[in-house]
Image (cartoon, rainbow, N blue to C red):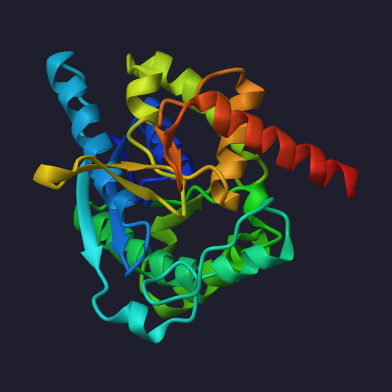
Length: 282
């Protein structure tokens, strides 16, 4: 029997890379996405599209690496939460990801909510199949200063509560391989995983969304036809673009601003300026 894992798949770069990592290391993956009323709901579309792409490749290349996928809807939750990331919240701040105003993007107890659900599913898989199961989350070192629920101390206490509250909880372990890695390190792992799995790097990463302020661009207004573009000014986008700059690789997602679609070079230049300004103040 294959190793089992339940992955919290946001549709962002980190958890999408972790999906590749799990598959390339022989896991059978159940991926769960959560609709909690986030403004950047396009990430759910990207997650579903990525899973379909991977499963199609696995089918045509006769690999036994199919991903089970489901979206969990947390209806009504966004109305009760105070965060810039949810519908009805304040404007998502722009700038460097280390700045204090990025705390406005914290969603109260978000990772605890997600981890409770994936723990429940993982334990159910483990007991039903009489095996063990990992819960996998793409949290990384760049999250630590802004998001307390991405720190090792929180993960340890959270796991302790899970073991105290459930019979046979020892069957479930936590798998967070990027906890001490930044986005550049995650992207490097993605390159290697794509090679192992026979996936096209650009096809994978164009099916991810890191932008907290995605822009809807109507390319044919008369028919209401539109496409989602990533912004390049919000902190999450700055961090992503920095990783692609370090990799010396063009990001395959499309970028735009208030004027409309822009070339990669525009997004790259803006982020290089932000990084230079941040370095000068530290």
